[in-house]
Image 1 (cartoon, rainbow, N blue to C red):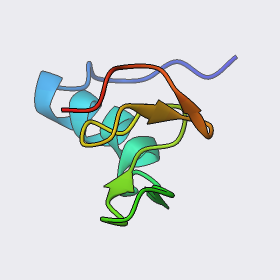
Image 2 (spheres, rainbow, N blue to C red):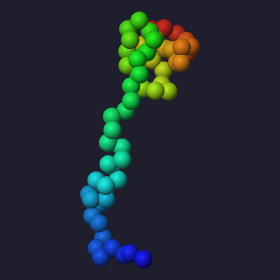
Image 3 (cartoon, rainbow, N blue to C red):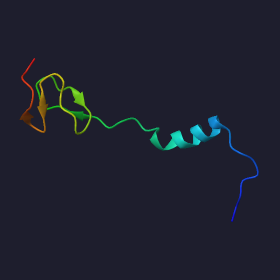
Length: 59
């Protein structure tokens, strides 16, 4: 079994682990008239809709 000769530094370990989440989060367009961009599975902060349903009262 392979055994590393030296211990990896904390910065090198964190650099390697951070590479898999380097993509920007995906965004969707809200169906409200303002057409704001929202993250998937989140409600629109402007109109209070989630998946086409009114969840929060309009602000």
